[in-house]
Length: 573
Image (cartoon, rainbow, N blue to C red):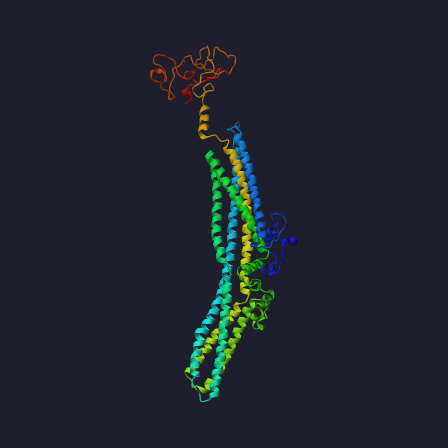
């Protein structure tokens, strides 16, 4: 079925009764305009119907779009990691300041996007709570009316009929005037028939409102929201913790934390893109409901709850002309008002006819009782008969009050106001919160995708801490000392003293040759770093019989050959 222009496949009748401006919220119109297509690419009807496989298929296709983006980004990340793993000549000691600054900025922006999601989650929850509260009020309203019908039944069964039985026992006694006696028995029969009709109609009304009470789905809605709200909140907080781990890795230059975030960030990327798919399909479906919520509710009640569309339309839509009548300051002249504003089609005739029939029968019973009272006042002495008749009048007045309450409560205005408030909550606040969740999820998914990519690029170029410390230690040793165990590059032929120059050897023409003489003796006695002389005047490891000093340059540091001072160990400290 092809959609009409503008995406509205059905009439907008009834929208003015729910929305003050006569149009759905702009967000509902925006998401409702999203293309609803089937697997063949053809446009389908955008009217909300979760039982229609074609409609559900169109929502599934919309949800697949973020999933395709997820697959695309995962492939790009996989290709990048493969290229990095195969690059064995990458420089491992390059500066990472720019990458760290970029990661910090992206992580901070990601936290802001998650905060937007927290705000949207709270808005969505508040709207659902308002909707559930409205449904609960509607159910309580119908429950109260049903209780009134039960009270009317109880008053008839336990109050009127027992008193009528007592009065019938009195009337069974023969009277001197047989004509009066027959008249009393006939009036008792008429009264019994009227009260039986009133009782039957009260039972019909009780079944009618009992059927309406079963309509309200607030328990299921509240159960789903009770699970969804804290779950979404916890998930968003976990994403913030992931960002905190990245901040710690940036500050501490921790390769382990960078790798940990790569794994956790990849999980966050998958979850966020899945959430974007869910939020997109949910927003479009909710918008399809909100373009005409009464139509969606009437359809659901008709198919799922077997409630006549006329009944649900009467209570949810409510005729505007009758609302205008109640707002008219002269409406008191119309008596009774409720008789002008009643359901008039299909199953709603049951309510209208039951109320009218019960009121007519009760009026007939009251008239009959007044006739009986006028007859008995002339035939029977004052006493028990007057007590019974007075009790019957009181019970009939109670039943009349119950029926008037039922007739007044059966109007559509209170139910319509509760329904309107619930629609404003779910189609205003909740839809706005869902849109914020969608924007937040999309931004978070993109930012986590970038963070995982740059984070992987960062930790690959971070050396292990052990290697980093080894490089620091080697940097303090002379250039001719390779790891503390290599020999000098060459041996000079001349002697070197404190402040002396190299006297010969290869490369002596260069003014910056480093003195590295392993064989000559130092002219001064070597000392420890604290200035004390080693035992025997020699360094640890020297032979007591010889004067050879173990180590490069015999304990002296290398110096430049152009008159530079030769530094010893004690000069450093």
